[in-house]
Length: 172
View 1 (cartoon, rainbow, N blue to C red):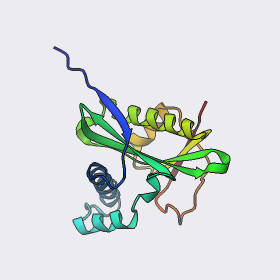
View 2 (spheres, helix red, strand yellow):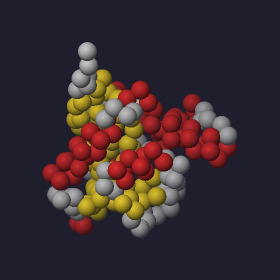
View 3 (cartoon, one colour):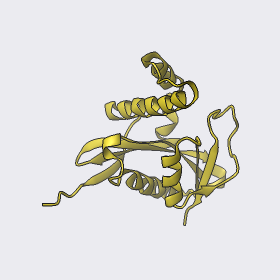
View 4 (cartoon, rainbow, N blue to C red):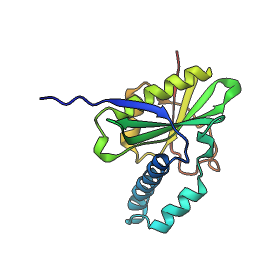
């Protein structure tokens, strides 16, 4: 017998328990990957708490943005933030893409991207941009598979000192 997975993607406050847990997991994973690559160690609990406090994610709540939560059979398994980057030019920005390891490869990331593009279109955005790090190769490959292409740097090192890759997608 084949089991069918039911995906739902819906907005949720960044302050909800599910969003807080997913954001903490996201911060832990990306910090661990950076520290393993550059210092040969993982992050401490205190370091992660500091990173979470430094980046409160308030720009992913209305009216500036939205946090989308993917659920598999009702259970939260991933998130993706979308915020206005340059509303005058119709540019939205993807932030904080994360899927729990047990749900990777099952369709959560494409569902999140499709939902974010739908929200961006509803807002009247004509383009979505994102930044990433070179070591997040899985994410970069995912974005490329979904039509994102390299674009010139659109933010400053002060805005994101870790950004090494910039991608964008025109919405139709």
